[in-house]
Picture (cartoon, rainbow, N blue to C red):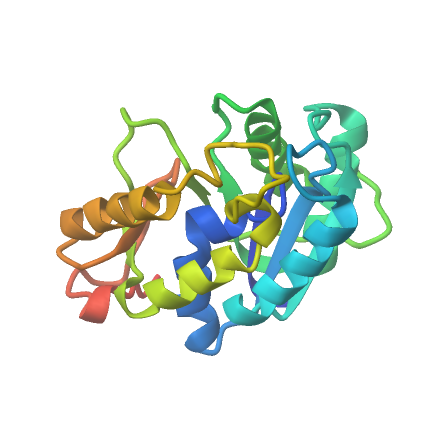
Length: 238
């Protein structure tokens, strides 16, 4: 039995907002049930405590329209492609029972993002295996899409997020500890004065590639089967 239409996984609080915030909003506004999952609390971050970041994530979840947002409490800068962490992720997948997963691409400059992607890539198979025991029963995910993939890969789909881009930025700004530079803040890429402007330019680029104002690219390892190629409004009927 499917419990959620989409489960979006990320290594840290705010990753979902940055990469696929518009995609999430587009689906929640269309009535789909979406859950968000963070692997860690971001406790090694240059700014913000885990408690502050949890409050910010909860506020952003309301903007995104998430029905559920959970944290797996794996160690920040210590997420590993290991049997122990795989079991935690498989249980999360099985308990949420999603049709579709969103996950970071499994090759990244950030080891937490990379290992999160590798864990999810394996977990979608293991979650369906009856001989692998966790608290929740086996579940088969229909599709997995990856975000933040290398430039040499072309996206399988570009989600039109033009209508929801303002809300995406609003959700990002809920993470004030990360994106608002204060007098006592450690300077980072995220709280640089032009960061949101550059993010808007990136989303504008992907929108242009899809013939829209703003877009978010997703990659699928497998070809996507559709019932017909005359797809209305960019929605795939698979």
